[in-house]
Length: 405
Image 1 (spheres, rainbow, N blue to C red):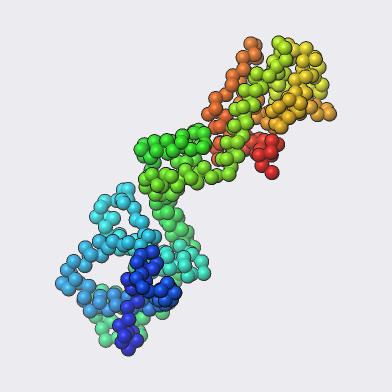
Image 2 (image 1 turned 120 degrees about the vertical axis):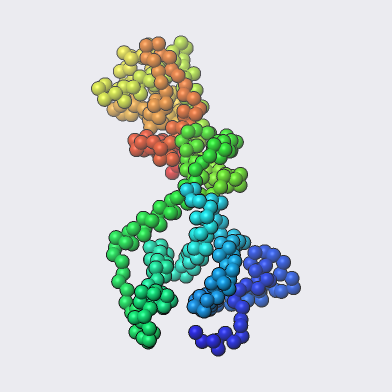
């Protein structure tokens, strides 16, 4: 330590008006330009502020000024530091830890947090395992002068030896397994901080906000909202829940899924009502769908191939095939049948509708799926909650009916 360098007793902390400038407070008559220059100078001399702090703490410790005799309320003061900066938002409690345990680790949390900020801002890369190793190296000691001086087992052995002979020159780096253990430990800590149990009250708030949103409340959507909230690791206050819902509502995949669900609800109803004279178009569609999806059935090449499967006449069947493949709205935009050169089969959109419909073939009683069932199928496919085949089908439908490029 060079004591002459501290002759001016310069204060390296932010002055009142510098702090006010940074947090949007009252800066009085000071110009923004001057305050910015002062703040930049204070920030770029942070190394000296830290160096002097390290040296001061070490000197205080060595000379006994940190003992209870001198600093009687020191521990209470250290564990009662209340920071006002925006980036520090500690948990109200740590599940599984007693209050006195949380109090004990509070100073260490401050050190770790500040170290994270410095490394994140200045280091070439953020390496949590290396940083944790540095912490442990400083924490374990054994190579520090004060450890030698206070260890009674070796105190007499080192008495009278020059300091240069007592300095440790080399360390052996831990094995790769040690760093892997550190990585696993840091991962467990990070995961435990992110995963916040969603209480019944928070679930009710999430469900209520989803019902008020422009999205259809479905089990896949609610599960997704729960996961988004848990991953934030923030308390379930209305402002946080609003942020989660804003993020979900702006999800482009969910918006596309909602658009598809809207088409499906309308088009399935139209399909079940479509007909000519006494015959229903749904019967022909269902025969085409079930034949195509049955590996044991021969493919349908012409409308006449359907006559054994439906009660309609050949003329009716031909009309229905034309209507559902291109001629009548909404099938001119979103056909459910493809009348190809060698086969009549469902389009991708038709396959999805066929999956959503259920039917009792003996009495041709077709059941319209509920709005929730339709929206759930669409949501699950874009939220990675459906099997690969279903996801591929929905993606193909998006492209086929022009919802995506």
